[in-house]
Image (tube, rainbow, N blue to C red; front, side, top):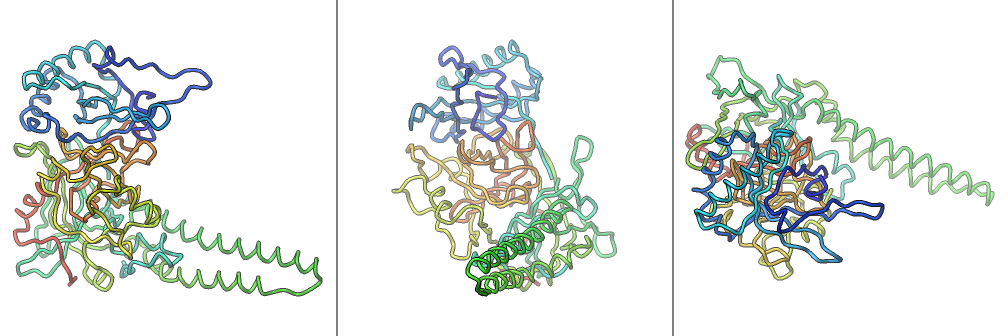
Length: 501
């Protein structure tokens, strides 16, 4: 795991790499040894980008013929920390994920050489092949509150019960399988209803034997319901509110103790500080009233029902692109959203301060305007990232390399920033921001929408790879490909509803 240190908090294990003779790697040892951290970056402007539509399926077929138990195929370039501020830029790597303990060194040697021979036929010789252990994962009331200002001390606990994108959801009959709502869309035509979008496997169990599409049969048929807050999400929200009240109660006690000591010292009677502390406690409790009332109403799962499933589809290796079609739509209970909903906005949250968020989205001072932090934290969504823009981003990072920075707000890891990379085996790949950042996603985030700094919709988060519950690489289905498939079921649908019936 030392070799990929920095890729994620729990980096994958290296199985084999073709570049070991040209650039040998020595595991750090000794009391003063330290790891050279790596960062996975997207690859753009390489010859492989041009021919990947032809080469990608051949690589997959070759691995299948070799009986390699592969889980993912990515293309990456690794930036490794050098001495001081030095950054060492590595070669382009065909990065193959394999099931743990499934591939021996001799087999990896043979497989990688056949892959290199295949790539050479397309004139690609400046590339290495690396195998890593990896598991591909899919996971899974009352009116909602309006989004609140950063000045509101209850902002962090109100977030999960406001209608900004990133709502934590679960199927009512599977409250432990939690996911995230991606988008609102209007059905259009004669219908004035608004629906929510997420992944199929958030709504239905999906495994090797259960991969069935679903279509609501219509009036009189039994309904499959969707609820706000699965079991874990509700418990965490309740605990956070109780902790907030408890912390302020502790501070009042501390202030009272301090005043008693002052009274002993000066023989006076100074109650102003105690009164001020109690005033602050009362103010904070008032700010939390809305959240507390919502929690009381939401304690029964039946009160958290926000809609019922209309249609859901799952299919793999679809079309010439061989993407995954993995989506589910559910009609929303309009009255629960009507007064608070503003449409498709992502709440950028409070974990990343606005100044740091802006710096992360601008890796270069002289870059074009691709992000402006909204005054109310709500980033409006508009348009889509096109296939051409995914392949050829219009941003440059601090190394003058093309990059595509993206944002998501999910149930498990909240708001995160990552780097998109179009070349991938099954989906659109997203790498963690850098070797000092947390992961871009984890189980529970699946169903989130991924956007760029301009609010352009990129894709629906469907899974990730890694040996543990966090992801070394996140995968999404590009929306430019997925939306036409959804419109086959909702021909008049459009993505930017402004009112809720």
